[in-house]
Image 1 (cartoon, rainbow, N blue to C red):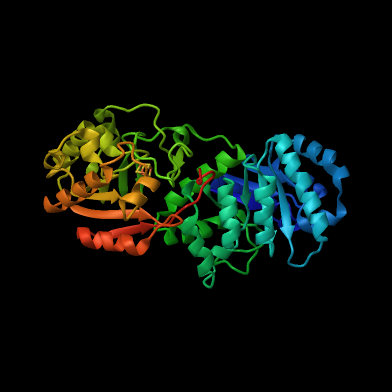
Image 2: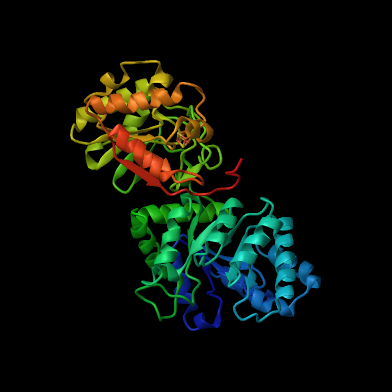
Length: 464
Ligand code: SF4
């Protein structure tokens, strides 16, 4: 796990810094100690030098903006270049809570640091307080899709979340997401793509439950991760993997071979997912395919299509999973023969392990086989069909199947046939802007199947 935002170079750690660093080396993958002005950033670099996995960020906090001017640009760049342990610029941003620095000054110094990040090709760590709307506007205007970065200690404002995700920025949650009263903040977790989620402590401040009120320290990041995992119905190790990989990718910390490896099968909770193909006949407006390689902390963008036996080798013992799901980066029916072969093998060793196929529902058109469902009887137990529309017009506009006309009818036929042949079927939709939930509910009722609506997660360039 990585604490992406701490201040272990602050005086609050003077007494026991060595011990804290030792604990970070033993229990965490990395810690980023974040500078708040140029002198403070030098201290951060010095402390980063004291630990194998401690990194530093160089920046000027909006409170300190009043003490700087554009003349300090060269000095800032020089400090960043002085150490290979510097992985980011910041913290920088806007803080209109107490306006310790005048607003104009805050903008001036923020812009200066954004320029430096562009020149140095480093990510930015953004601080925002009482300035969500202004920050959203700033990001839209100044970043232009060219900068990487993170909204540190995100406090839940929708306008900022949307602007940040549209820019491809990461969202980092600190101790406040664990506080009992912050239900609205926790609710925002559902809208953050897994590939954009980070955790931090902001230590020595903002200690999470149940250590709230104490001096915070980097290893307490685990408490925050635990609450997030519970809220998102994932395991602790899922959140550990997801946030660690994300932090490494953002801050340029090397990934292990294991983290880089393309995943044929991947575990989430106690389900095993089988990633057969990157192909899909649809092109849903909200789909991450082609934009992100990593989903749920796994590299799912296969560069080849491995043979069925390679999957069997990786599944090893199907008995240990609650469910095995054919669902990956693309559409499982694109490899119908291998899907059948693997499902047969699973059922041979573990007939009670349920098998689900997550599909776009165009199996008839993809395989050209009318007898497709008969072949899957006794192998597949259920289908989760991504319908994502409640009318043909909406379907062709949003899902954009490559088969064109007739796809909607084929999809509905697949669902009805599957139900009549005794498969469990659920239809799903993403709650994208303009999605009509009531009509989708009616469609599910007409088809006689349950439905599930998934939160819509924005990402860079989703509009196009
Ligand atoms: S059906 Fe699924 S994989 Fe295919 S484009 Fe739509 S969301 Fe992406």
